[in-house]
Length: 267
Ligand SMILES: Nc1ncnc2c1ncn2[C@@H]1O[C@H](COP(=O)(O)OP(=O)(O)OP(=O)(O)O)[C@@H](O)[C@H]1O
Image (tube, rainbow, N blue to C red; front, side, top):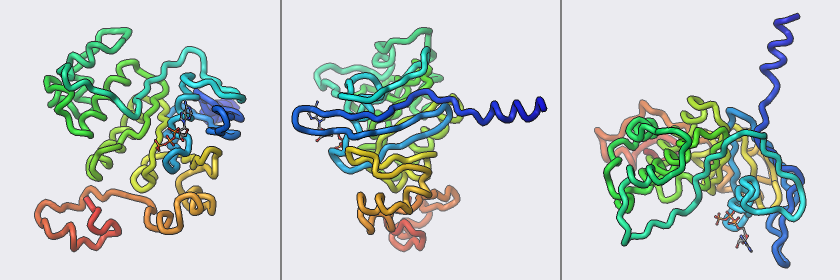
């Protein structure tokens, strides 16, 4: 009996954030229509959709930065949310090192920056000017800054933008690791379906309203997904599974002669 009760408890999902019947109208424009989304501890949820679909707007509503016209946003009392925005304006006339940038962020307790950066694979840039970082390095620093708050929920708006395919794979692996090691929930936005599918538990396809949602396997076979992204994209951008044994360094020609499904995009 006791055993039954504990397994029941394990199955109860720890909901951290929920959006119910969210509508947002600005002027004549309807930006979000009847959106429902729930985020549970330990899961990665990805919102995909074309440009202008309302992905960033949805995150802003979830974060309480944008008030919906109607609907309810519920955030569990006492949880901490870390946010990595889509854009960070870095003033080129104000040079700042990574260490200084992190020191400017609010944190409840003293943080060991070397360890933090080591955790996100960016220890080597600790004394570099922020302006000199590559796209992938900058994303790691922004993620490190968000992690300083020890968030229960990490919200990432297009975390791999401007990063090459190899860097994207690494960043999605980092995101999965952060989720596992910190047992937080991750809510992220991506245009990219290709790589993100392998690194997410649930996907929401958004085009103002939720066109379809579910596990990546369910979504990729949903006609609404094909309608939104086109049959070619749905077929071509099937699951990306990176074979780590798959090496290219020894044979540069291999990139073009590779017989895996990725063709010349294979990394
Ligand atoms: N405050 C606002 N007032 C009016 N329109 C807005 C406002 N914020 C966003 N929009 C519009 O709402 C639509 C959705 O914008 P949003 O940035 O959420 O889309 P997105 O899916 O994140 O797009 P992208 O993939 O290009 O980043 C866009 O057409 C945008 O111009």
